Length: 423
Image (cartoon, rainbow, N blue to C red; front, side, top):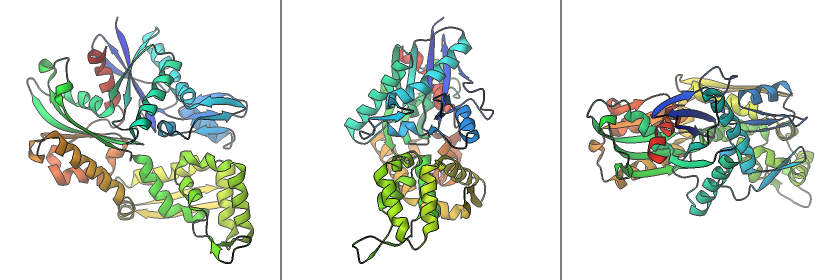
């Protein structure tokens, strides 16, 4: 039997599909996740150097009081030239080594399901890892290397919005053809494709001419969380603190680089270096509010950034169905209960939404189609649930053209469907 895996390695969640002789099935890859067929893209190294992945990683990290090393949003580092390696429990890891840990876990779960080894994989990738071509090439090369280290021998790539398009294509009726705008909105990127789709009875293997335009922007769910952190929460960690530095007459604030790093969860561990911690101690000595600087120290040293951003994520998700929510977080001496409204959320993220809107407009323009010539708009990915993202397309196309399917498995199903085209 000819078997290929479709593997969607996501910034937040990953998923796996199995393609066997043209039949595609999305399979469970995390027995600890009871909410769907996904695996959280996280790794936890405990103090005894045991390695956990997915929901098991999160639970062990919490149970161990945030000791050890917890890593998430690893995909975000793929285009980063600054990330060369890191040491965990005195062992050196390249970025592709870390990603390979997650991919190997997924591969093993898939092989348990089919009962034998699988060498072939279709890996999803965003339209843009980076708008810089060299960095984009670096990101794909690293992801390929990670897949090889995970044990795959034959690796093909498929753009994630095109994979989502193939999933939507399966819903078309006999002889039906549509010009569709596909939007895939994940944790790290927003990708768009204008493509001609047709029922399987009309499909051909060669699909290159069906893709009318591609576009993407490096904005996703993590970007929205970062805005909440910056606007609502950084005040608890020294955003507004004033201090007197030795030899300086004027009062100074917290260095911008530190505030920028704590707004991106995966960058908080970079603040653990001795030089940065020395600067923070110096600021605390003359700060007009020592308590908030101590909060910052605890955030960095005690490693509770993950739990804080989980609280932010929870509030963001609630705003998709409610007009008001609250960011609730209690850790160490810090207690946060910060109200946030949907209006506030949309205001602080206006720039992010405008960039996505501009990308969508430019992608449609490059397709050569008018808005009226787009038959359907299909959006997927966790960030597609955000009302202002949906409104962006409703305003342009009308609610009747908007379609959604499973936000977390549409891409991976399409990656499996791509096997017949790519192998």
